[in-house]
Image (tube, rainbow, N blue to C red; front, side, top):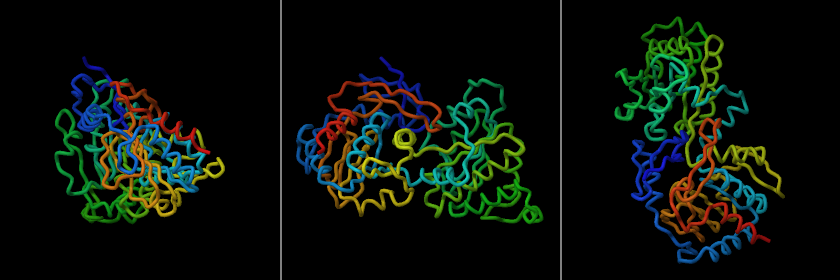
Length: 422
């Protein structure tokens, strides 16, 4: 018998995924959903480990509590969890004066910095599905990160309003991108997307030109259409701008994780936002930032509710503070005296750390360097119920418990650790 479930494998949070629990399989066409559910449903119960040796939950929790009792500056990182798990992490952080940082925040923080500097106009997945007639994707393609994006939001047959088949354009797509990765963005009637290839390092220049063109800056308009800018003809960039200006409801999509290799990539995001703002003077255009995964949108929203800050925050005497750079995992690994690593959706291992390390996460996690304590926990949306935000932060969706498991939940483990602290 199949169960229809919500899939937490990416920020789309598709709520129509068929799961055959008895067969430990899903018939979903999304490869990311298949990998997530098959990996979790096939997970065998794993004993907790202390220094690589089998233990039981009680001993592992006691050992973890001892580590944090002796810690003055713990780092809580990874943070791959849902709402209830994140609330438990925050409660433990308050009691231990910990620093919090999500594993994918290196990209996400650039959106935060852009909001702080100039704000931005974004849309929701529902609006994209119902209204968007032009989709402009900047510097990425979604076949790996959000495989069902075009199927669910762009080529969908159900819409509240009549709209033409959307036109898709890519700007700043690396030339080495396999053509197969773009198949999902070809329309059902066979219309291929407009693809403007360039090296990632040239994306800041391309965005500045697009912004200048939409602002009617005269120096560019005096140049020949054959003029090359970052290897792209000016005429091609003019076509992109003209298409966006003619849109009834244009959407500009970007991924912070794809841009983070560019130095000061928050400035690229600000260029994207300024481009959107200028287009909005004459027609309707909105942004749609993609998330990076492992519950990052959920974790940041939960942290903001409870503390007033997204992650990269720190508690001192129970009071939170925020620093987008100083509180990064990379900076804190050399300063912390203990590390709590949480990754319950995927078997992701913690970074190398000289301090005592407690890893709590996916039962299939394999370690190259064994942490001091490892406690396997239930995978949300498979072994335990939960709640998560979609990547547009406009909708929360429930995760179902699909399979029985003796694994404890992350929240229950953290509450027990907190209860043992002095």
